[in-house]
Length: 291
Image (cartoon, rainbow, N blue to C red):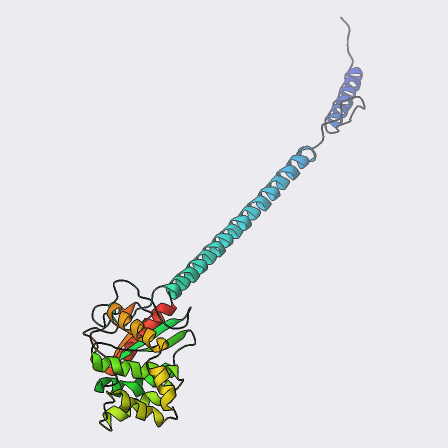
């Protein structure tokens, strides 16, 4: 048996201690013995790109969300603007519709005027709305109505014409109608119309004979020869015939009376005064103007 001396043991222990210290030192150093595999890099170095990608994704998501909010807000604004535009257009249409809707007329058919069964012809200027006054020189109401009517006629629009129609119910009406058309044919009607009314109603001179009428015309510068040629002329006879036809077609049963455009008559129970007649005729004219 080999004997190990104390000195040998001591040396052995020293050597073993040195080896243990070197081994411990090598475990604490990633490259302790120069031949070991280099340790993998720290996790943050590997994880950094993923984190950056995550941050980028988060940023992209936030941007997309913001854009979505902006698009939603813009869409909402567009919808609101579209709704406002639609509401504005609807309001404009309503206003236009109200502007073009039939007015709330004051007077009613049957009470304030009547509509002729068939629209009759007119005798005035073509293309204009015609107002016709049916009258008789011997009628006191026609005499009272004349100044009211003349004031109203002066205010009529340019697209409205006014004509007078003397009724021809009996011989007295007929001779007064002939008087009217004779004055018109001679170009004297504007000068003589009111004077004829006054001669009959103020002077009580009825002008029912040809000689009386001739004398009356002489006061306005019409010679006897000129009067005779006109009083029985073809032109006057034609006008009298036309007056008789229109008196029947307009269904004229009383005077004074207004016929508007051959369609409407003021022969109605709601007419209580001469001013009522003018008011109704004014509305009827406006109705025709808006057709």
